[in-house]
Image (cartoon, rainbow, N blue to C red):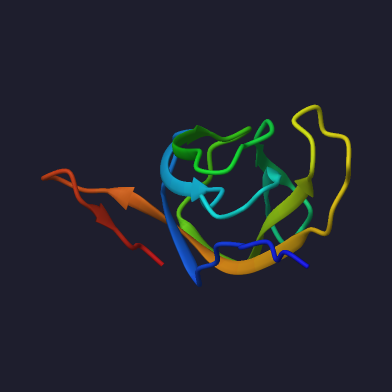
Length: 116
């Protein structure tokens, strides 16, 4: 039986007030399945959802459905749905990775300041 590699992390940092975000969300090369990924706040708000992602593909930038104010969003979920076929058929197991989403404010010099 083949296993599915699911990337995980304990936190992700976003910029406050803008929907465009830099990320590293990917489907590992060793997988033989397609991913559909979703970022969901603890209250159920879906911030973003990908199309089907084939093995070896990654997102380095995403556009959220809404911008967020500065703060720590605990128990944010990166939800993985896995499929055996590129048309979204052949539903496989999925996974949910909980993490803290830290939303920071930009300060002079281009860095982001944690104001919480």
